[in-house]
Amino acid sequence: MSATPMPVDRLERLAGQTTVTAWLRAYDAHWEVSQTDDQVRSKLEVLSRFCLACGKEPDELVAWLFRETPEGPRIRLKRRRRVMALIDEFERENGGRPAGNVVRSFLIHNGVALSAAPLR
Amino acid sequence: MEFKQVVGRRRSIRYYLPFRPVEREKVQIVLEAARLSSRAVNADFVQAIVVDRDHLSEEDRESLKTPTTTAQLDLAPVWIFWLIDPTAPRIGQTSLKQLVDVGALTPSHGWSHAYVDNVVWPQVLQPILADPGTAMLVAAVEAGLAINQALLAAVDEGLGTQLTALNAANAKRILGIPDHLVPIWIQLLGYPAEDPEAGGQRPRSPFEQIYFEGRYGHPFERDEMVVERLRADGMIMSEAPYPWRKEEVRALSRMFGLPE
Image (cartoon, rainbow over all chains, first blue to last red; front, side):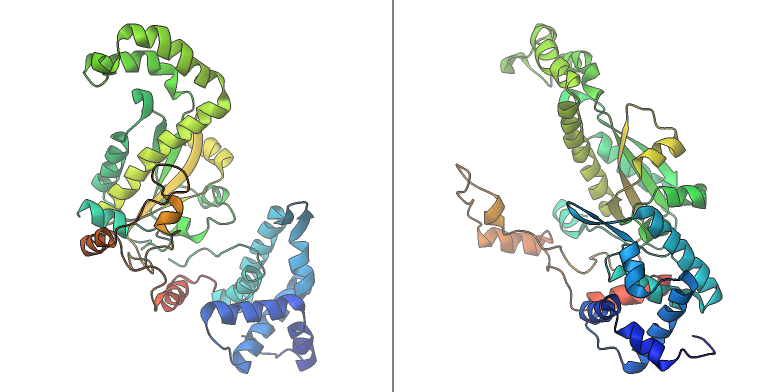
């Protein structure tokens, strides 16, 4: 999705983050698939670019979207809206809807409920 | 459609054909069904506003969403905002006497104008109206009866339908809803983009775990012959998930550009 590939060590660091591991595992389990290395690498490239654009690494981003309460973690709705807008902007400049949906998928499988405006 | 099939085929549809409008007469039929539901005190516990999705600005549409009500709002062309009225029993003294006059509430069951005036109004309805919690509880149940008929009517008309949460404060502001009414659900209407069976009937608790006979905890024994008859009549259908459901959802997600 980009002309300049991300350095391999950058992608490896990303893949080691707890939320990234959780995402990839949950995605495979939900859709009953086993993503190929190429598919995973492609998604990590996109996620990495988004992280650079928003200035937060994956674990940091997910943590920033939640707050702890006595009843358990709650999504910070204003921050969620900001991230949704950032994703919309990101996909306009970085590969369109498929790229945006990689980021959305990452957040969804980490418990951040969101979607995209359907193409119609 | 036969009644049992309507009950059996109802699903919460979450993918709609966004370009296919809903005929106005079908919307009216949905409302007519709600209007005829069973209701306490013969009062209007529920009112509705029909809104064409495309007549709302993008900003207003977004402001009506909650974290879990997202793309389906953009897909369904018609939204019915259901509003509940906890003050509806205020007309009870009049409406109950009307029911006496038309022969619905009868002297053989103890009903008279005097009973309404001297007992039901001061001892039942006024206390309900004076207790907001009880009034809301009563209104919610009565509204549910009407809304369910609206859902079934939509299915009977070949539509997809679903109840979805909303941002009530923004709904009141955008639609000019009076203060005494509470927006409770949006009922979406549209033609399904997914299979109308939406992957099968949803899992339910075992029949005998929730229905009892004689006393609580003593199961109402389920007759398998009846179950078989309901299967044949289309009320009990195969339970979700159908083997191809995930593939269907992936295909729909890709068609509409939604995340997986």
